[in-house]
Amino acid sequence: MSFLLAGCLDKTMTHYLVITGGVGGAKLALGLSTILPASDVTFAVNTGDDFNHLGFHMSPDIDTLTYTLAGLNDIDRGWGRREESWNFLSTLRTLDEETWFQLGDRDLAIHVYRTSLLAQGKTLSEVTNVIAKKLGINHFLTPMTDSSLGTVVVTSDGKLSFQDYFVKYQAKPVVEAIEFFGSELARLSPGVSKALASPGLRGVIICPSNPYLSIDPILSIPGFRCSLSEITVPVIAVSPIIGGKAIKGPTEKIMNEMNLKAGCSSLSVAHHYRDILDGFIIDTLDAGQSDDIAALGIEVSVGETLMTSLQIKKDLAQHCLALIEKIQS
Image 1: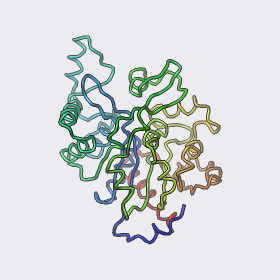
Image 2: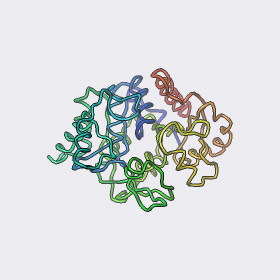
Image 3: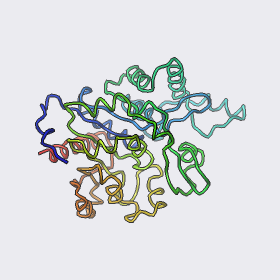
Image 4: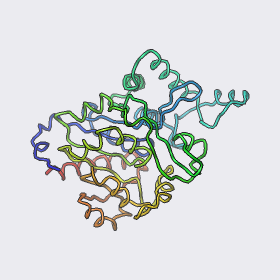
């Protein structure tokens, strides 16, 4: 890619587009939100996990990012809100209703409110913005699309929606392929389109979310992957794999079941993104893969990527910005 145009931009107009899924991506997003002014970043969130349950519209990845940036996330459990109560779920059990999707009372209030606003004709982008502001978030969160786009996991037990695969069946079926229902008709949300077209766009950061279940739904929107491959600013990513292991979720299992040549590794992730990446941050445990990744034409940077504290989140965020500047220079 050519960065001549981007390098001439007025740095006072700097903006970053951050592409993220749930828990892993939200950690880096939190780090970025602590070092970047609200006006300088757009967080584009996966909605392939969205689904309707018990009459409510659920947006799990948007909620994870929202709770994290608002300081309301349950760090110990790794999902949902802290100081949660479970009266709604308990009552459902007495009614012999399905309770496989864990709905806390505080979390439920958000789903009820979102569903109500959507029923009034507001878009998911508008609703997400309203909820974020009401929870005290100044940074801009936007769904990847306002269109209906759902992740479908093709498994040994047949086709399953993402939530059925991941939550109801606990990611046990063998994954054979992943599809994105409705992607051919989807369009980028206004917030993502605006960020891409910003004259001050300095770089695009892909968070360490599941490449196949969290990032690919976003990249499946017509024209978006092509735009990233042709954009005049650096596109970088942080690997979600550390020492051949995924920190959370079914990433490792899926990568092994897909029989990737390099298995569950940062190298496999680099191959997956190779058409759009200019830079890639990998953990020190994976430094031995640097040469193979660099051979793909990707600038490799090594550092600590296990985000166990706010300081490490901030340091990794700074690392991302530094890599973008290095590629720009």
